[in-house]
Length: 89
Length: 296
Image (cartoon, each protein chain N blue to C red):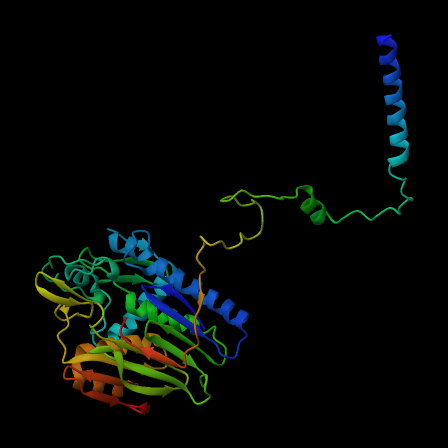
């Protein structure tokens, strides 16, 4: 009796899964025209997408590292002064 | 306006007619020119080309920049009868100025070193080879700052200004359209000015012992070495300011005018077609040449 119950439950579970798959599987997309191949640089750029860089690390291979708070700017803005002051230095 | 630190001083760049981003790009380019000159010509880094020349025991091959600077220095040595002479490096070290001014600490002063002269330096311009006797140390600080300001000024637009710690080049008519206004600092009180000038397309430089002055066992010393004595100068001037076509020329004239004193300094400036402001030890201000004084 117990073995019969097990088989019935297994059968019902299988039917349930098939019905679920039939109802919720994605509809087939219409055929798309073939897209032109991306230019090599764009393809290379999409090879790896960095989504997280740990603090203190930077991505190698980028053209110019972005300035960080630890990198002092070479020049600093200053309020425009109307007069120059000559002195010994 | 943009500022950066170079050659142990603050450098300011202004080009009022440029957009802010273009002015910043110009300032970055000029900052690199100053940084390159400092790396090459500082006495305070063992890695600089000047330090390698000052350590060398034989002939050394020099960069084009070093050769050009030495040739320019020789021209000024000859024009001033040897009163401008960058071979006083050993005297600066003997007086205690052997590290950047900010790092200077009280210490004993050595005896004045033997007289060194620029004519003892052998410069082969064509082969770019330089050799110096062991007792001769070069200090190119002043002339290099002036030449660097001139080189950077070549990048300025029609209206612009470079101020390298008081040595300045101005181009055009200034922010107000009637000339760049220049305050001449009072050597007795840096918070005050002795007078103000208006300049167009000129360079200005000032020499005084009031800022780079230190104590040694033999008394107070400063960085304006008199090549005749190889000691810090004893002048009747407290400050000399020179106005000339280039910052290099103004730098040399200000230094030599200080060494010559009030009367000799005025004669020097007049004979060279330059102008200047001399402040004597009593605080009296002497204007030399054709200058537009607007305040003072």
